[in-house]
Each structure stands twice: as C-alpha cells, then as structure tokens.
Length: 133
Image 1 (cartoon, rainbow, N blue to C red):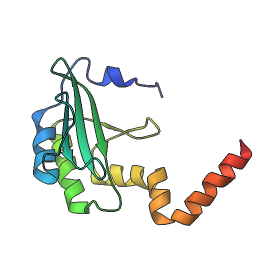
Image 2 (image 1 turned 180 degrees about the horizontal axis):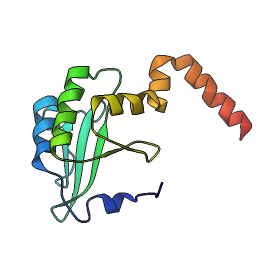
Image 3 (image 1 turned 180 degrees about the vertical axis):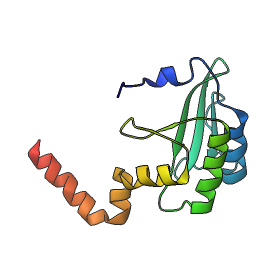
C-alpha cells in the first residue's frame, strides 16, 4: 500500500459538513485552545478535531475511547462520515470504510484494544518488546 502523507488528505477537497453535524450531535462542541482547531467531544476521550491553516482544513483526527464510547453513538458518527464519503485511516496507515463492522474490526486490531481487554498482558508485552530491542 502506498503511504499517504497527512498533508495530502485534504489538499484537493474539504470535509463535508455532515462530519461536523454528526460530531456536534453525538459528541457536542469541545473546548479548544486555538482558533485554528475545532474540537467535538473531549480530548481526553472520544473526540474529533479539525485543524485549519488559513481557514482551510488540513487535518482531521478522530479518536475513539474504547472505555466510554457507546456502540450506538459510534454508529451515529459513522453515518455522518458515510454521508461525507470519507475513508478512515488507522494507526497502521490502513484505510477503512466508515462502517461499524469495519471500524470494530480495526479497533480490535489496535494496540488500544489490546490494552483495554487485558492491561496487564499488554504492559508485559511492552516489556518483552523492549527486551528484544
């Protein structure tokens, strides 16, 4: 798979308002420390952030907190993403359709899932990885 650089995501188009409407409906507007960053939700939990440069969106970040997100809320957010016709990129730079099935599969393959399902085993695996390097 060809690596997609972050600055390439929004160079030719801008996110549809469906994304912002869904985020506002599900997460609510969050506090931001900059006029160039819009945040929905809580940065310490599930949130969506849009970073702007000269008024143009240059980066969109979506973080799912597996400890607190409700399945129906995630589905509502993803419906907005589908209407906006976007793809999601995970921590391993893999592309995913914004469907509940695809996102749940990606989440279950994530390091966050490993931690949430068995924190002690996850921490032990980090120690083991550090010993090998």
